[in-house]
Image 1: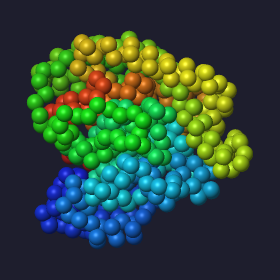
Image 2: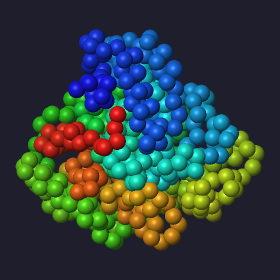
Image 3: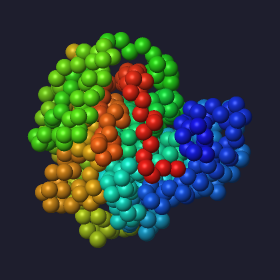
Image 4: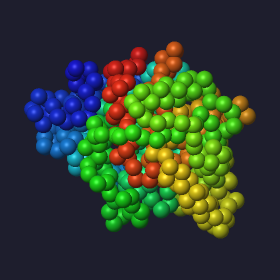
Length: 474
């Protein structure tokens, strides 16, 4: 195993640097070479700061949790860096954020070295990464297919071994869908677990969480320890864990009661056969480990209500972002400024009154209260992460009924946990005969990332996935 080959993870890299086996510069230089070699085929990295990263590596201390670990960012601000949200309009305005986000501060203080930003769809509002600004991000398992969205660039970069981890975010499935598409592990953390400020605010963006795309459960836990927790700039926070998250992988799991479903989440259409195979395989694996698994799910998950809520709420997020841009421009945004799907959401939001927006927030509160009662009986809910394998590029971006149906099927299972604020993981436990990954999702009760890390580590040990490397990799 060699850092030059890109097979070390976060913990391996940081450990080797602390021991003096490699230097931070060697770690960063190797990642830069991999990006330069592989990314032209994938289009996962859209902006880099390689010179600054090498300077930071030369001056980096070696005793931090993430000393010398190269990472990529998606949508957390770095002072003075381009912050375009996948928008051609914002790129034309050379939009930059004046300060660094708390999430980024914590990552860098822990010793991580930021190499650049990854590809995203416009305003992070699609389950695939295909924008007018940066073009399509391609899947390293098959470049004709989507890498998912909106953290598609992050997922493709980590899967292709460019970096051991990349920051992601999840407002409706945007971390879990790319993890499924690229054969990676992630957790959409619970509401308030990781900070959004100052570039965003938790109380306004209540469906969102920031986390990472990683190749191992251990790496994710280490990263979460670094960035978790809130401060005075946040207005909403999660209950703190009883111990560091990095102590959870390998800890006893016990016998869990797990419900599962292959339906629900916004579409009455049956899941793709490969998604059903992924679910069946996970059920068998969990049962072999001694867990009780039975067909059961919250009524709110089985209904199409969660999809309806996220579709009604998401345009308000677009409107909030648009308002900042409009203030700077001194005019209202038009259809020429945005991609058609983004502008349609903005128009929808413009037709809503303040009272309707408040009612939508109250609906989220009430939906959450109804949903969480199920977790008095069950420990986890198991579903496919996506309703199908990764679609072909262009297959879910159209406005025609076929494209909309395919997009709904693809992203049907993830919005529920964004509404309730529960933590939800995607695990890479299935590959199709054609070599495309299909993840399975585990949703836990509020604040229970610890349980997800324990069960995920147990599943990773029983059915290791790190040996699955895509054809396109560094």
